[in-house]
Length: 194
Figure 1 (tube, helix red, strand yellow):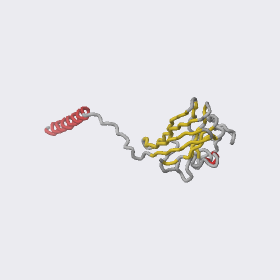
Figure 2 (cartoon, helix red, strand yellow):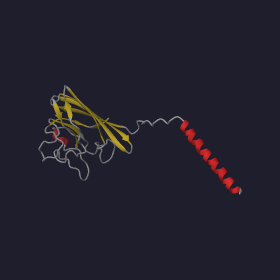
Figure 3 (tube, rainbow, N blue to C red):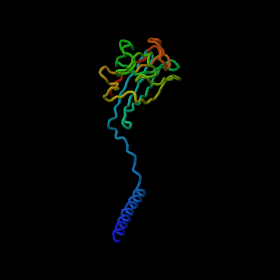
Figure 4 (cartoon, rainbow, N blue to C red):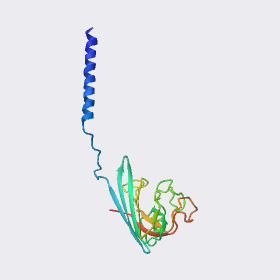
């Protein structure tokens, strides 16, 4: 009959230790959330220019969980009032004309860089830029591109550019050269590592 008493005493000792550990954990101060150390943050910059138009685009990539988040801040002067399509383009060139920037950034085996087709599914699609005064600005975040190495990097072999269009991007798929993605390219900036 001694065995049941020993087993009961051992169970009470383990249970008491568990309760004591739970109370100690509850009384301990809460752990502070982990702050980003800044390691792995990558920056990019583009000087945007067009006829009577000037501005900048700042790019910051940060780690978000297991993925990357790129924040883009665009500030432009000299745009006509209204909405303007803004896109990341596949080639890091703006000269001799803005057509040198190629189609929309859309890498991959199923990519389609035609500026008017496959909307709004290009990796380089961004929201509209609203010009309501002398300076137009927007800040957006995307997981569709990266600044770090990889298949979605804006810093691939031929680089990338940011292009502002004269008209709004209608956000629909249209015929090639139909202009549904924003029509004429009125400003461009080559994206460079900062």
